[in-house]
Picture 1 (tube, rainbow, N blue to C red):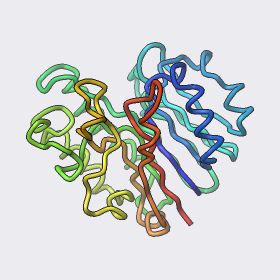
Picture 2 (picture 1 turned 90 degrees about the vertical axis):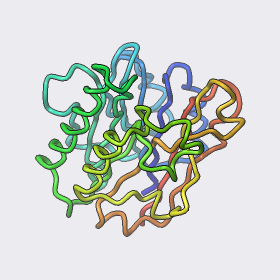
Picture 3 (picture 1 turned 45 degrees about the vertical axis):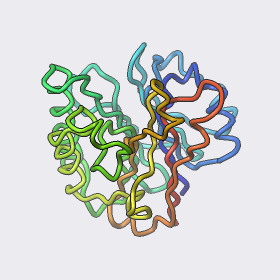
Picture 4 (picture 1 turned 135 degrees about the horizontal axis):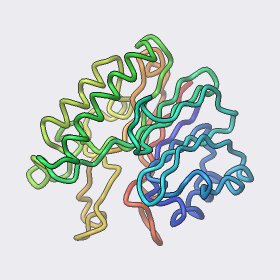
Length: 253
């Protein structure tokens, strides 16, 4: 299975780039975040014409997630099973593997209501995983986590220290999820770090490689041990009207 995750930052704005990337890379599964469209406005016909099924949990203007897969998904779940109105999680069973695609809240500013929502959302995600799965299951949790795990994931740690993307409380929330039973498959293949998946549009972030690794692929050990490689498609951050995120790709035997 070739699996990828990509925050496209508006599927309307990035549709042609997405279709070209699917045609070139042919992943078995692609998890998308920040669709910024409702389910009805999702370009399902174009995705199906490209050879993919789509499990979509959309939302107008903000958020929205989807799992694209060459095999038809089963047991599709949307949301954390509570009354949260934000479309941030979609899960499905694909070819015997449980895929959970998540778009973690950004948090905006430490101490704000959105910051508290971010921390609470991560706690609820941990409870969701514990309620529905076991660490022995073949399970992938991937997406835009809006957290750099540690300073190996940050080009300029001094600049980002204490922000919503690197704050110790956010990192601990993510580590609690990681300790539930996951391995970070990208880190397993690149223990030296210093490779990034997001660059701010402002202040020449990409040109100066002032990046952070915010997009992650976590897998339970039974699956992670079958991962034979993981890469960030940095070239997809180049060119005309790119997303501010690059796709992260892992291949499992």
